[in-house]
Length: 448
Ligand SMILES: *Cc1c(COP(=O)(O)O)cnc(C)c1O
Ligand SMILES: [Zn+2]
Image 1 (cartoon, rainbow, N blue to C red):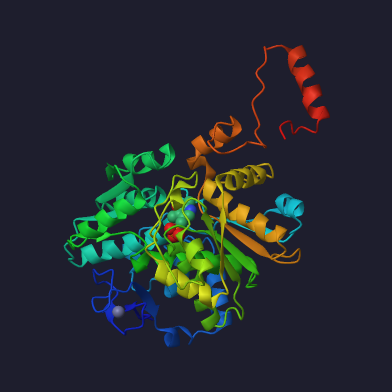
Image 2 (tube, rainbow, N blue to C red; image 1 turned 180 degrees about the vertical axis):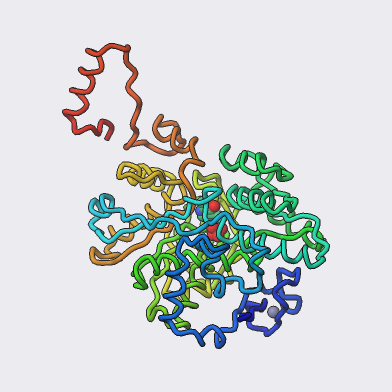
């Protein structure tokens, strides 16, 4: 059965477009667009039948349903033919029970959704598989698209370059010079993208790519493009499926351009409409204090919004002062009784290090979300019996400079209370045994 979907203005002006139109904003009122699905048609399948279908497809080899995104194809991108799908079998990421960290905090039901355990090491793969598949289908149908382009704080460009290369579609990425990690920079280079390193910040790159893509032969891959939302929506659906269709009390998300929180919210709303769940979690947005326009707007009850000049932060993927999806995110936060909190450099670095001591390997953005969790627990807003999911957005291995800097105590503005330095010794049994006796007598955890 062909499920229907189309693009519709988020401001409710009523303007719609076919889903394969090259358009990113409503031509009547300038609002962003969202993919809308024919919910009446989707509701003809019962909640139990949807659940059964999603279980049957878990990690199946039947193309493309083994992907966490394409296993939910009917709710995500029913217009894409299976032959057009460009997938790395993204999704199905571990929902890690953070047992030791939860015990330390007094919140034993603490979980971390490890979205960075993916092909290019961040949740951006989830949206990019939908966007690139859709573009591949549009090109096959004769659309005159020469390349796909994005501005990026690092992870979007990595995902676009990989999926584009897999599809044989040229990609162009605009990166703010010296503001992405080495690990992130080398990814699009290796995948053969046209890499443009510009003397500006993310917001500057975003402004340029929006102008570039007014030329419809250069297709825009930023999350302003609603197709990305559809894939990222599965983060919430997947975590609920992992809890056997129980909804957590809190979901904490590190946010920058505000696409991901909008997408996750959309996934929950869709599940509720289909009868898969009956309540919604509270969504908490976590921002770096040095790039906090949403937090400042939250303090005004979202009545006012002013872009800020984002300052340099260790959480470089969310160093954004003028978030494109502000409008979408505020709509979602109102519906989810959402809140926004911020974290300093010290707080995010320390939260990441503390989590690592319990077996994780957190990126700085996940550090922001964890630091916000610590604050909400301390303030008594999150209780010991709440079920909490922290969305970990990227793989820590992309942020080696952050980790090394922390453990060498060289990060500016950060005091590394959890630093763990290698012990340099002569190669002698006695020296090693002596050192071990000393260290293990302190419980193995030297630096505090
Ligand atoms: C993109 C990104 C975010 C922020 O997501 P938005 O949709 O821009 O709010 C957070 N963390 C990481 C690691 C990212 O790459
Ligand atoms: Zn409109």
